[in-house]
Image 1 (cartoon, rainbow, N blue to C red):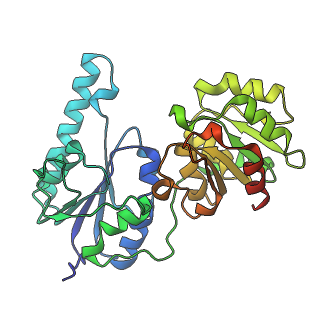
Image 2 (cartoon, rainbow, N blue to C red; image 1 turned 180 degrees about the vertical axis):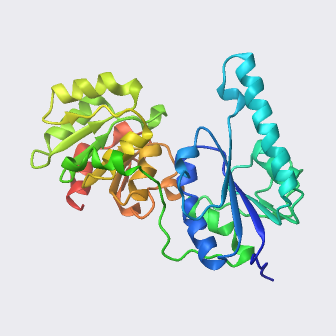
Length: 318
């Protein structure tokens, strides 16, 4: 039996990373299309807020700061009180449905569901089977995270159609990089060791793309490596100031070549063709949405083991 959400209030919880939140955005569009009258609110944190900012399908956003992201006691207390206020507001709102959109169980995420006292509480089972969800969502790690999010809404007859991921970039930031429309951008940063690609291999890769105009981008920890790559190739390093600034650049280029990370999910969300040089990440679950055929991964699951020729061949397909 399907549950009708017309004129109901639904709270969606996604309080992890920005790339994960971007993978959630197709369901906002699908929900709004299926139920135009639904009140759709979302819980995020200050770390991933940019992944939902200005999303046209959302009514209200609860954004809190995780106390663990603060260093001193006063800031931790301030963050804790901020989160408490949001929990009180959620309890008062009397939601009909709360959906925790995380394929890994999170006790902190479930708290928002529990405090709501909603009739329908949707989420994955906890490892100890002691969660308070009354609708459990199966996890299939061969499915993409976007597909998992739609599984979370299966009881409400919300189905995946042709929805894309969405990421809002201010027009001013897009305009700043308009001159790079015919360029290829190589983003060299990834947090996990197994997902990193040696700078000497980046140099070899770029020097074999002589027929392309190349840009390099990086996170601050890799600025030094980016400068070194620039000095040894025909590429130009663009030192972006933030994820939003980087997204303005990504939204203009012809092709994004990137390691695994937030940038990999921003690419499709701003309609840029995205090629992923992948490491240990489960790419059935996390490939750049719409570009599964542009994923390259070594059998060893170490990005640095991928051969330059394989990347060049994949670039030729673009």
